Length: 47
Ligand SMILES: [Zn+2]
Image (tube, rainbow, N blue to C red; front, side, top):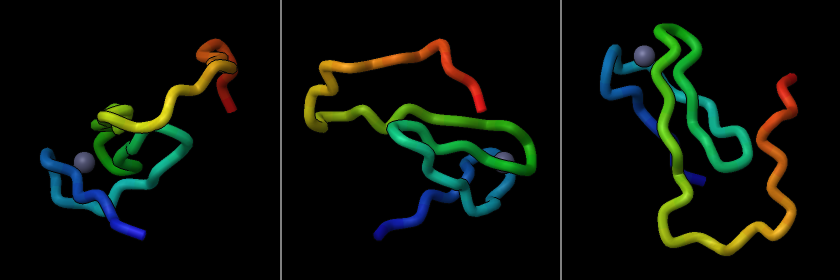
């Protein structure tokens, strides 16, 4: 799979579901770009 590089600090970002997040600076991006629809989206759950 492809890796995401933080545009802010250059660290490799971790992908979680439909977001990628930098563990170093906290920068994150949505990767819901032209993907499949998720009919069961729960955005209130935090791990
Ligand atoms: Zn970063």
